[in-house]
Length: 145
Ligand SMILES: [Zn+2]
Image (tube, rainbow, N blue to C red):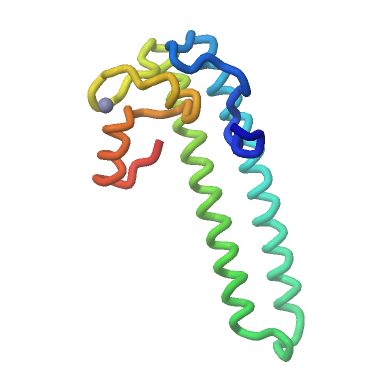
């Protein structure tokens, strides 16, 4: 696996076929939370930049400003905000996973109670479902991990 593909905060070398110790799970969740906090900060500052840009655009005369450009800026901003919402939802999932960890319920599928493979938990530390029920959950309600 190449370095660039490891966008998620997962350790480069790890035995993924055994169930992880709670301390490993906790570290992964904290790393994930750190990563999401960073992503959120970047998105927030970008959203702020665009707001500033939009203001300066508003001050210019409309001669050079094609309406389509304004439209794409609005679109950009909406996309940015929806990304921000996604990140915040993911952060909430990670926080819930930390609570499950404290209760000893971490790493089990919420639908069937079976252990979620560690391979999946190392990629998606806040996973709530096994592969099978994740797919089912997405079909039913657009639930995300
Ligand atoms: Zn399941």
